[in-house]
Image 1 (cartoon, rainbow, N blue to C red):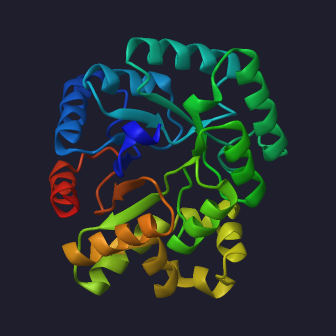
Image 2: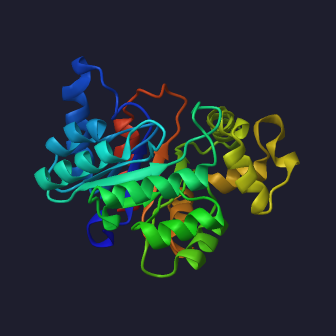
Image 3: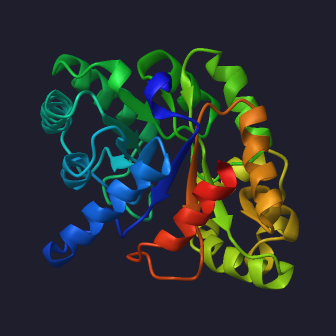
Length: 285
């Protein structure tokens, strides 16, 4: 997987995975442009699925498309295995099944998430879905080790460069490590941090993320008033092109094989920030 995914990808939480048929052509055009811009992967955020990935795979010829994540509570493992096999057969192995346990506030069935994830992987194995075609959204040590032993690697969301380094230590050298990183293309500190806090607010209400921050050196004080400057600056890249490039490089230096870049610009989740994607491609070139 490392050989085809490249160093940089785009993470998009709504616009590219939306199901509005009237915008299918626009989504296909945007995916094709991302491929032309040189991004190695498109990661579909939220509770995405193979069905969301299929149109983007049809519109492209090289870029990898992955779910980030497909919730284990929303899709039966056997059906997920069939979709995984069919998409990869049709599109030269370019579909990656990114799996996660979501959050207690978002999934009514949420119980014993680690055990549920292990059982889900067992069912995928039983249905013939190869471990090398899936990755896990792994934050805690046990899940990172599961990503090492039962998948092709980890696609952690909302982590720092320091946490990336610790994930690499647990994963070892071979598995894929592809953290998501939020990017604010804004040089004014007040404006950049305001946009960042607006985006961060929902995550500070989800214990999976706040517990992970606490495990990694942050305190409850860092969650007040929309997030401390220390927290915002650790999980967002903002500023000049040179500064943003340096932050991305920091994650690579910490052990990331690939960084999934999410543009944060204050727009709606269904926007396609194509001009921002072009600027990102230019500053990463």
